[in-house]
Length: 178
Image 1: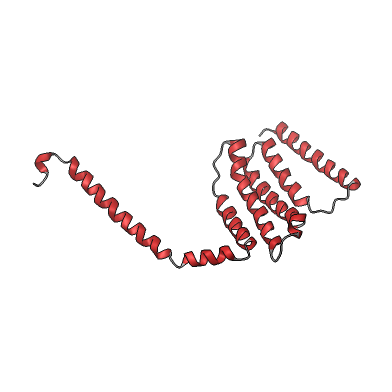
Image 2: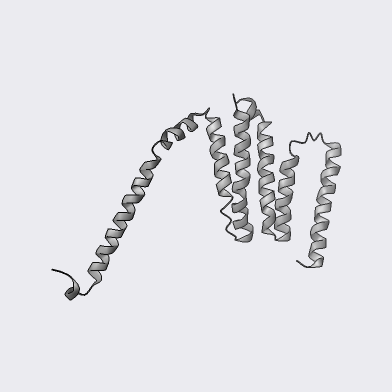
């Protein structure tokens, strides 16, 4: 990015901050949207400056902001127990999932690593939302994890026998026994 483009991006950022501070003087702004707007600002900055690295703080902050907004929504008021916490985790997960989507759309990049923390947070959010039923189910399934090892072992042996059979059939007929 050359010096002129940096000046334009900096100018746009200052204008955006000025608008936000001006508007908050006249609108009752309780702060619950601040982190979400900050995240969206990073995303906008990323797109304008053509810097995909800024999508990471943009996605994370947008997810946290979405979680905050969800916990203070009417939806959270209707949930019992730890419902607010689950909504926060689901909002936070959405921010992580946003990173690879925006990277693909705006930069044609593949950033799949954010799906890992996003999936973990979404799983925790859903588990808490279901009042622990999902956690109990995962615990029950967890008792059978050795079966996965057994299946992988059989698969490896089967694959080796199949390769040996294919190699045998590729040999000239005079080399084959029988």
